[in-house]
Image (cartoon, rainbow over all chains, first blue to last red; front, side, top):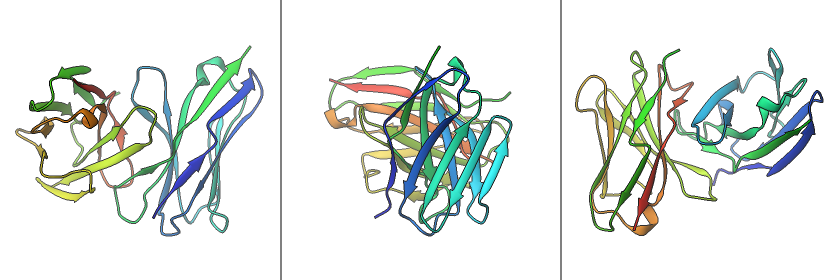
Length: 111
Length: 112
């Protein structure tokens, strides 16, 4: 079945770049997403990429997609303490609208 | 900026009781979803809803679950007879198309 995997934890120093990685198994994925969850809050849609693209940039966020290797990454430039959160990778799986999530990567930004 | 809202933020119930979790999607959205996250596990899809009917449901969404859009603004998830294993965070989401989903803050359901 479909599966989305992420590393569980990332520690980064303030001002450095963070790179969060995700792999997925479903080759029929049409869209891939990054969501952010701060403590006590819901899932905030950060960005998403269509599967026929290999890169998307949005201010400090850069998404890279390697469809051949089924690898998605999120780079956060100039990481700030407010970027500390859990980041979820998700893909559309085998049907529209049904998101398949990874377990989330806890990002801790240290001063 | 418009947001999806959910009530209550925390619901405690006894096993076997019925609960209704409420969501107010973003006003011009047409697609509605429920997901849940059991503590320590991944966020799981439950059901999608469009044009006043269920588009897709997961195997988790069995006969004890139902969804309804009782009026133009609310979207509800009913669990008829709660079990201990229904304890989870339940997220509602909505979107203008199936491309993007905007999530609410969640309702934490605790079944005792």
